Length: 411
Image (tube, rainbow, N blue to C red; front, side, top):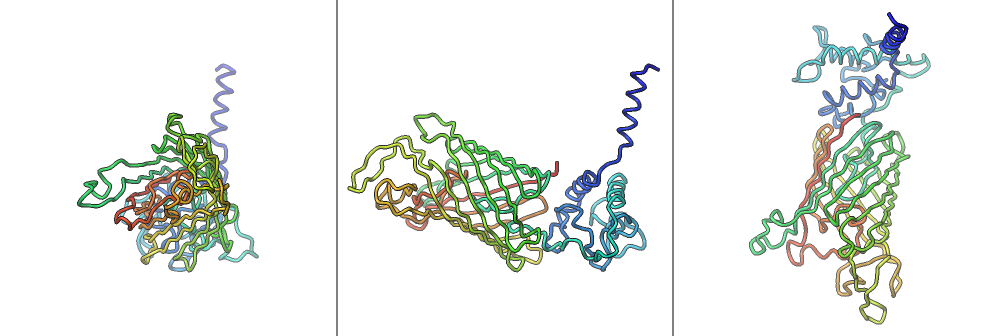
């Protein structure tokens, strides 16, 4: 045998026997939970298997047994629930599905055995309360606003946002409630670098815009804080032809403060600023003397956003969602700093801002929303309200139907 072959063989043997860190083994177990358990155990009834497996340490099952005893697989009720056996109380898990493979069961056993045993002075219930690990909102977005909910470490998300055409007059416009008209959509991918830090890239067919953003939520109610606080920042590039769009490079910042009340009512206040929000190639602006002048509008929009979800049902999987965004004008009379389309481009227009109402459902790693909105814009810069959204009831049907759909995976 050659020296090179011997070295190569020793290298393979060393790699095969190298110990796996507890964090890496925990990531393996998390993927097992996501694939087999999280659809039911998503925190809606207490136990949450969508979060890091280490949060199960100190948590007790329905019968009072500790789910995970660090360093003691046989004393951990979680292992008994997935192994089954004649002494098991209740049904083996996953309920109604084939048992976990021997390889997956071994991975759970190895992970528990590798955990550091609790100190004698540490209370048995030192683990996380499953109910407290619930994020404030079910999704990373409400309808258009970003929320303080993040994906979690090594989590990947694919999102589709879709808005149909204007509802219109059902028996006159022949748009079939907007389904037969043109639509606006957005495709997005996001990744959780660490808990509380996500990056996102998305594209929309509205002005062919690309958005790259980062969300950071350093204060999270799910981690035991009284509220959640986060920041979002993004840059956008419009690749539509220059004669059709102005201000092709722009950006956005948002600050978000949220809280989940009584484990059923989620609320959020957002203050945001979007730069260069008027993308009309030759806008006409109204001066203080009432004259209309053509100009390149380099102003932005300062706005306030409100989001609210009321969770329904015993499992709290369904929600009634509300979102409202209103511009904050600076009060100047002539070419004010903040874009306010209702007062500038259309002096007789409304200044309602934008709002939407919808229903959502969370099923494991899926999140689905249907909604009716006064705008069909999706990306952050386009969604920023300029005050140009009209009253949705004058005429009847001045709004848009839409949906959001997302799916998460662990990488």
